[in-house]
Length: 273
Image (cartoon, rainbow, N blue to C red; front, top):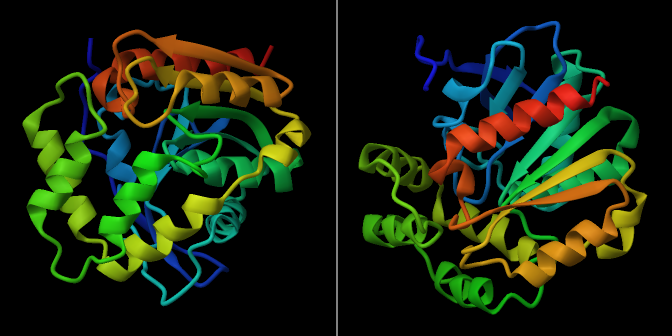
């Protein structure tokens, strides 16, 4: 059953890295912090279907990363380590010593970088439809060929097709429209600046340094990420577990937000034992 309540209150925070980011917060402020990182061209609203299912005992922050949604769009600074530095600065600004980091889709690459660089601040990791790397991914490389030629104003049909391409199971049309509008906020230069470094980001040789317990969630009908990569991802991280959602696509947290919220809450609770 969906937990109903007031709409999330959007706050803004200025970071020491020079950007201002919007975020929403909910749950028990004395509980373990959980930070939700959306994927490429999305925003904090990527978790809007998940938030109502999370129990009040979970202290959750969902933020829009630089260049996305209503966040600042600096002229440069879109490498994975820039996003990881923003995450560190976000935690500093809110006086969060450590947190569970949740990376959805390409947000997982930021989560990898953060966990490798800041093990003492990573209580746990959750990857949801997240690549170990996109290097050599033919479909994403073909998508880059289109993105590399984008110019403002971006065709809404292109964005709608992009969002739909991640799905296997239906989601409410009103939600898809919201996510399409969030993607359209991103300038063409940022579509390019974010995606190009992701094509080559590969921290495979460093994954063994991740100390935190890790949950890897993958839909077995993901049109972007193969099962073989997820198996290798899990094998590379010492304290990891792979959970497979039968019949789910890439954005499994959109398709089955109740199950994803339950798995996230259970994982977070287990870290306290």
